[in-house]
Amino acid sequence: MDFTRITRLNLLLFLLLTALPFTAKDKHAPLPPQILSAKTIYIENHGEAKIGDRAYEELQKWGRFKIVSSRESADIVLQLSDKPPQPSAGSVSTYDNKTGSWQYGTVNSVTPGITYTSLIDAKSGELLFSDTKKGANKRATGKMIDELQARIEEQEKGSKPN
Image (cartoon, rainbow, N blue to C red; front, side, top):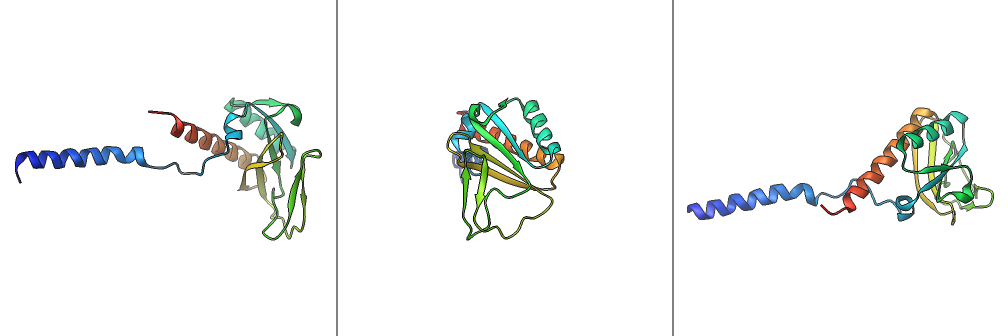
């Protein structure tokens, strides 16, 4: 090989290796646009008070959303519960926007010691995102909000031009 060809191969290899980080995909599926555009959030706690308190503390610390005192004035609802937001396969569920609760068909079982978090569009009642963590406690709630923050920031970072 001549010197020019080696230089070209090295340059090509360098370009390929430096371009790899820019072609890597995000680790998660995209979050719905309603979550990314939301400015206000209402905390609806169907679990122990300490879980709702922790969610409030973490959201205040994060500072992304204005926490409001009613569902009607919110863009999204953060629903915390010790029951799943949707029943297992084969069952039917609907979200009643007036009562702020899920109406279940057949629910076979609820696993104790699990915290369920759901983000719901406050206007339509559509379930936008849900997550679970082992432990029905403040730590699990804090971890879920930290992970949500990371997902939102990851998605927003990926959508901005370099």
